[in-house]
Image (cartoon, rainbow, N blue to C red; front, side):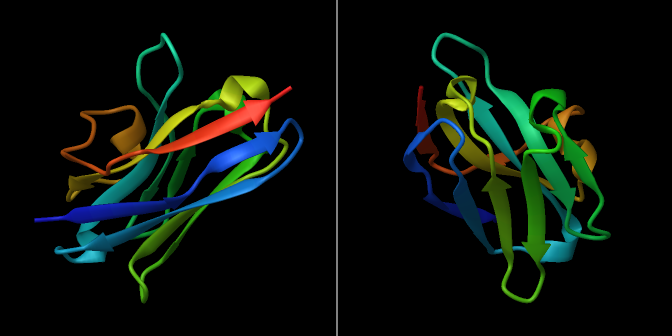
Length: 125
């Protein structure tokens, strides 16, 4: 069974940057779709960015395209989300999530099967 452990997050001013990392264990990395979801206060959880462990294909939600970069290190079994030019509307709890034999469509398709514990990102104006 996949285990996901997030790190990173915190408080940053608007325009700043943060990096989130997700350590993946318990299942072959190349057979997973892995991504980052966020839940802003009072809103539903949404897929922000996802990546295929098999071929590295990526998905970016429209509002973060050009500001966030998702990457994976198959040797270290980690997925990283570099968040640049952060805006107050990026505030929320960010969850690493995975789907067995999934791809980057994890963000918009059937959705994850495994979730991390979440990490809070707060962007002040």
